[in-house]
Length: 374
Image (cartoon, rainbow, N blue to C red; front, side, top):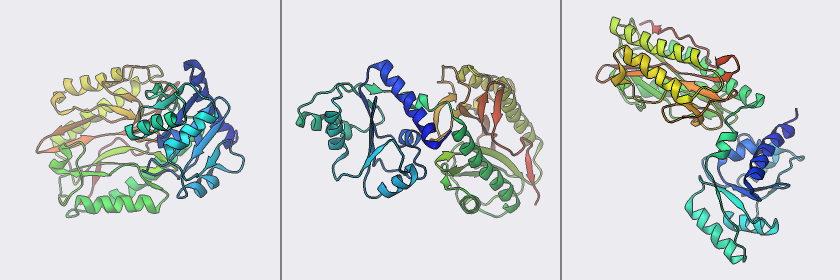
């Protein structure tokens, strides 16, 4: 399958949804959705600078001079998308396309900001048209849940870089280093060894800081006997990795091993229970039961896992709020944890794909508690 055939299949899935809903067109501004539909790798950044219009027989994409050449290079000459960088506001551009295509029912994503939506309504009024604007409520996110082979390979490569960085950093950490120093070394290694960027802000949380699930690395120096929670991932061609490993600097105490074993058991029993069609909240509730039965339920408050892809958090999930089936082909994390205030925290996270045979992790490092010699 060629790249254009691959991305045409994604567009066709959107058009099928449009036909079912009676939409003449869809206006898109959400960068992850545009990356998925266009296949333009390593172009999108944090700015909402692009606007697309999709109809049953047309594809238009508006950008500006900062991105235009990159889109041309990435999408190729035979792309079905009509690309321009007209010097006009996104709302005015969209209104012109709506007028030209005679679209009367135009869906907009609920992720678009109110300023754009108000401007779009105004520009349509100026053009003497009054289309209906129904909302897309995460519908394209749902289309993106099931990953194709191209996406799965990008996700695996992102994880391979992340795995290698773990082996490196475990040989680097020494007593007296600060959390920030470890973070900088880890991120630099990933960026120097294949990563295009970072999946999210790296968490390096040592000793009592590890009891804060989203602790930010600071000036604390790691000490012998510390558990160190490391939650991070490499970004590769816009696809994310996500992994957490908790290591011990020197020999762990009996309590540390006991709690680690509970987290590991929760992780592995939940992973073994995953099948296509399982309800995400049921898997989360299983993790709660295992940790609660061991006496640590009060110290585990977050969801078990979330979808990963072009975004670090996307559909579906293994959380208390995901009361829908998890389909085969979706990529989800499993990351139970126990966090004891004033003492330490432990989290064990893999990222993997739901297959017809169960949960297949991309993550390579062992679930054994890694002990760093001092």
